[in-house]
Each structure stands twice: as C-alpha cells, then as structure tokens.
Image (cartoon, rainbow, N blue to C red; front, side, top):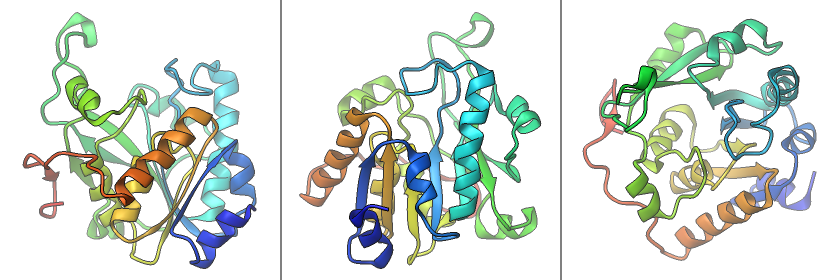
Length: 246
C-alpha cells in the first residue's frame, strides 16, 4: 500500500489517484474498508485497456478484480454492458446480487439496433453486497433516470474517455449509495468523474487507472474543481426516477 493511499484511509488526505493495475492496489487494502463504485471495461472493443481481450481471457481477468473488490468493499457497484450482462452473470465466478437500472429517457442516435435510430434506453449497474432487494430498495438502490452525455456535451466539458458518465448521475448514485464517512474506491477511474462526485459530497476517494493518460486526466479533473474551475452545466431537470430529486 502506498503512503498516499494509507493517508486517505487514515483521513489525512481527501483523495489519491494511482496509476497502475488495480489488482495490486486492491490486494493491499483492508477488508470492507471502502465502497467500490466503478465502470469496468465491457469487452466491447473500445479504446480502453483490456477492453479488446477475447472473452475467454477477459472473464478471468475481470473476475480476479471483482473478487478483490468484494473483499475490500462494504458494497460494490459497477456499470456494465446490457448486451453482455446475461453471459457475464451465467459464467462469472463472482456474479452480482442484482442489477440496478440506469434509465436513459431521451436517447436517439444516427446508429442503433437493426439499423434504426433507436438504441437501448437503459444500462445495468451491477450490485454486490449484503443487502436484500427489499432493503436495498428502501436505501435507493433501484433506478436512476439521466440522459447520457451527447457528443456536443462531451466536447463542451472536455470529456475524452470513451465511456464517460454524466457528473449529475454520479452525484446522485453517490448520494444514495454512500455515507458521509465512506471512502469511495474506483479501480477503473477513467477521467475521475466518480472521484469528483465523491469529493463534492464530502467523501474521501481513491482512484486507480492502468492507463497513464486517464490517471493524469483524473488528477487534473479534481485539481481543476478544487481550484474553482467549471466542469459542468446545469442539471437540466434530470433527477432520480424514484424517491424524489437527486
């Protein structure tokens, strides 16, 4: 465990972004010490490390990291591909307890399923943890309604990561899935939106990315916010699907 990560765990620092294989970082963390909120590679061939692996290599690679995430996480959440979810749940050695729904109310693109302009209006968020479905529903582990970022929004906000998520969405899930004294760990942190949302709500945060460009971008994202820079626009009326506004 690096001194910077130890400083976050002990409360001496609010965040750290580490560059490297998250498996090594996870192995150095104590049991049930963090809440894991992440967006794993989906095996869809995007420009992300390990997203181009054959399924036979991808699944054991991911399972090893999820198993460690379950060990260190009091709760663990990860976005996942709707097209790959059923196969993953059937074949994984570390299957989730259940999915949470990210509903995308207004999603139209030039390309979609069966050559139509429509694409899936949802994306699963997988949950590993001790809560039953009934208990989790009371907590707010149910469904969220936010549109994904349009290309023009991504350009305006300087987002370069292929699967960047809206900050408004991450603020909402952070509010409902974490407590004020939690440490949030994102082992595939990308540009750092999850870490930023955690810090904005007063949580501590640990981010890891194997790609140096994303680890550096995550640090810059947080430093820009801490310096008072503008990283987002208004909420535009989007909120949680159930249980009130985000």
